[in-house]
Image (cartoon, rainbow, N blue to C red):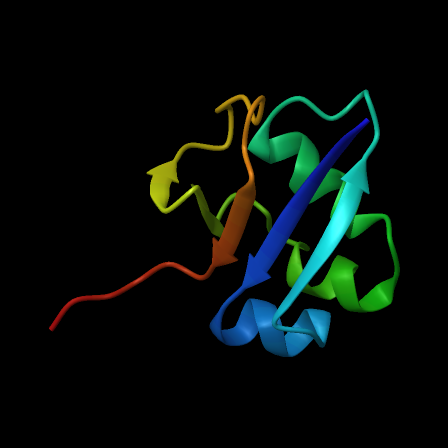
Length: 86
């Protein structure tokens, strides 16, 4: 099992209900996509935040990553909505 800090931004944070938390991930969670799926199963607030997990962006230790990125060695995983420019 892996302990990691999860950080949520913007509407992801609003739906989850907390800005950050420390969790112990199950051994079956290996990628960012796996983390999002595991979170979606934690309750209705998480399910609402990750209902369309493919649009939620992620960063591991402050580096933007793709959903298939392995989380091995991560100390922090952040989730946030897509960003727009202007």
